[in-house]
Length: 415
Image 1 (tube, rainbow, N blue to C red):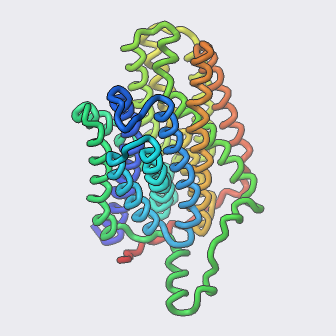
Image 2 (image 1 turned 90 degrees about the vertical axis):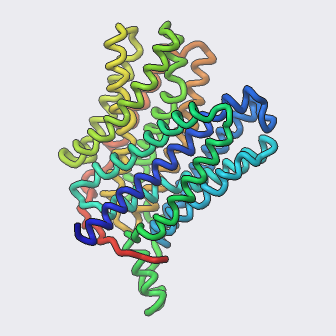
Image 3 (image 1 turned 45 degrees about the vertical axis):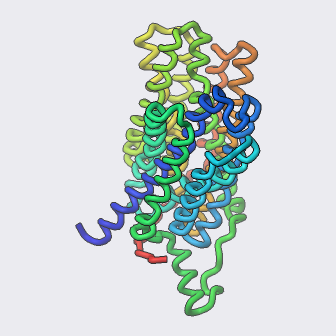
C-alpha cells in the first residue's frame, strides 16, 4: 500500500470513528435519563430533563454552525481535534454535576464539540475521496452514528443502574483516540494550508481568508437556502420518528413489544439505506438520488398511516428507515460536491446547524400530536408532507451550478 493509500485509509477510519463517538455520546443522555429520573439523581425531574435535553441539542446546533467557518479558515484537522477534546473533557465532567443547572451547562458545552465533529469529519472525508466516490464515502461515514447509538444501548444494558459510566466511557474513548488522530490525520483543506504557508513566508494577504457570507451571494444563495430547508426537513423526520415511533404505533393498537421492534427495524433500515444511497448516488448522481430518496420516504410514510398486517408493516417500516435516514445524508454529500473547497466547511456546517433546528422541532411537533391524541394517523401525514417539502427543496436547487471538483491531495501535518 502506497503512502497516499495509507493516508486515505487513516482518514476514512478516523472520520468514521469521529462520527461514531458523536453517536455514542448523543444517545448516552437518552439512555441515562430513565435511570437518573427514577433515582432522582442530581435533583433531576421531568421538567429539568426536558431542559437538559433541549440545551444539549442547542449546543450541538451552535457547534455545527461555528465549525464551518473555522474549518475553512484554520483547517479540518485542527477543528476535529479541538471538538473531540472539548466534548470528551466536558462529557467526563457530567457525573460531577450536583444539580440540573450544572448538568445542563456541561451538556451545553459538550454539545458544542459534538455538533462540530460531524461536519468537519464529513468535509475532510470528501476532500480525501475521489469525486466519483464522494456520495458513498459520506454515507458510509455516517453509518458510524448508528453504530455508536447501538454501542450506547449495549453499554447501557451492561452498566445500568450506574448511569454515570456511560459518560465516563464516552469521554475516555474520545481522549484515547485523540493522540492517534493527532499522529495520523492529515490536513485536507488546501486553502488553510496555503494561508499558513503565506503567513510564514509571503504575508497572510497572499491567500485571503474565506468569508462565510459568500454562500448567501450569487451563485450560491438559492442552493444554500434550499439545502438548509432540506436538512431541516430531513432531521425533523429522523428525530421525530426515532423519538415517537413506538408511542405512535402503540396508539395505533400494536403491542408495546411490536412497537419497539419497529423502532429497531427503522434503524436497521437506516444503516442499510446509508450503504445503498452512497452506491446509487455515485452511480446515478447525488442530486437525482436525493430527490428520489425523499419522494420514496414521503410515499412510505403515508403508507404507514394505514393499519397493515404485521409482516407488511415490518417491511414498510424497514424501507422507511432505508429512505428517511439516508436522504438527509445525501444532502450533505451534494454540498461537498457543489461548493468550492474554500467554502465547503462553512456550507456543510451551516446546513447541519440549521438542520439541527429540525431535530428540536420534530420531536416537539410529534409530542404535541401525541398529547392531543392525534399522533395516529396524523403524525404520518405530517411526516409525509415534510418529506414532500424536502423533495421540493431539492428541486429548487439549480442544477446548472453543480461543479466538478478535483479531490485535494492529502498532506501530513504535525501540528
